Length: 329
Image 1: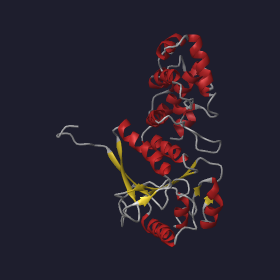
Image 2 (image 1 turned 180 degrees about the vertical axis):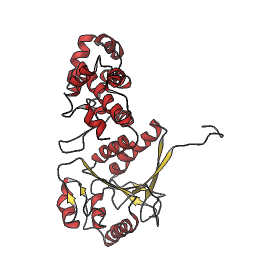
Image 3 (image 1 turned 135 degrees about the vertical axis):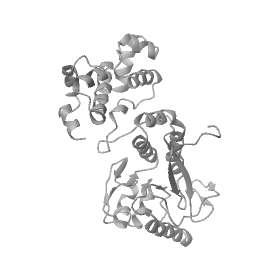
Image 4 (image 1 turned 180 degrees about the horizontal axis):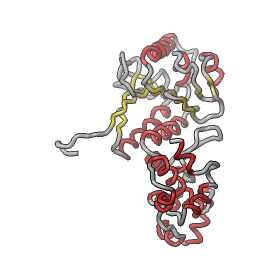
C-alpha cells in the first residue's frame, strides 16, 4: 500500500483473555487462523489483542507470555472476546483463584449485547461463572462438561460436539477444536474459500461431527491433504460452469485420467462428475438467493445443459425445488 492509499478493510478487534496456566495451543491455534485470514484477503482485518490481569502470564507448559494488555474498561461494538482454556487446576493457589474471579467479573461487566464471545476448551468455565452462557447452547472439553453444568445450570451444555454456535456465543470442545471453530468463523465472515486456503496452509482438516453445524457445500470433499486432488477441486470450484472433462482435469492435476478417477474417489468420497455437479448446484443456490435471473439463465450460467438437467442434479442434494429457495430469501 502506498502513502496515498487508504485501507478500506473492516477492522474487527479480537481480545484474547489469558487465564492462569492458559493452554498455549488454545491461543496459538485459533489466532494463527486469524493471522492467515488477514493475509489471505483484504475485505476485513482481525486486530489482535492479548489480555490478562497482569502484564505477564505463565502458560501450561511453563512459558511466560509478556507485554500483555490490561483488561479494558469497555469493548467496542462488534468486538470478539476469546477466552483461552487453561489447565483445569481449580484447587490452585488463592492468588490464581482470585485472578479467575477477576476475569469472570470483568467478563460479566464488559461483554454486552453487540460483543461476541468465543470460548476455547475450558475457557467456557470462566464465561459460565460470569453468567454469559445462561440460556445459550454451548460446549467445552469433555472433562469439564459436568463442571460447566454445575457452574452455569441455566446454560444448555451440549456433549460430543466439536463446537457450538448460538448467536453471539461460540464455544469449542477440547484444545485443537478451537482452530475448527475459528475456521468456521472465518468462513462465515469472509468466505469458505478463504477458510479452505487457511486449513490447507496449516495442514488441518475442516472437521465436523454428526451434530456439528454443516460445512458450506463449497467445502465438501476437502477433508484431505492430497495436493493433486486439491488442484483439480480448486479449478472446478473457481469455474463450476466450465466443461470439466476428465482429460482436462487430469492435465490440471498432473495425473492420468485413470489415476485421477481412483484418487478422487478415495480422497473425496465422490466421483469427479458428482463433485462437478455439486459445485454447479451450489452455484445455482447462490444465484437463486442473490439474483433475479430466471431458471433457464441460471442453468446456463452454472454449466447445465438445460433447466431439466439442473433440476435432476439439484434433486440429489435438496428435497425442495429451486423455486423454494428463491421464495425464502
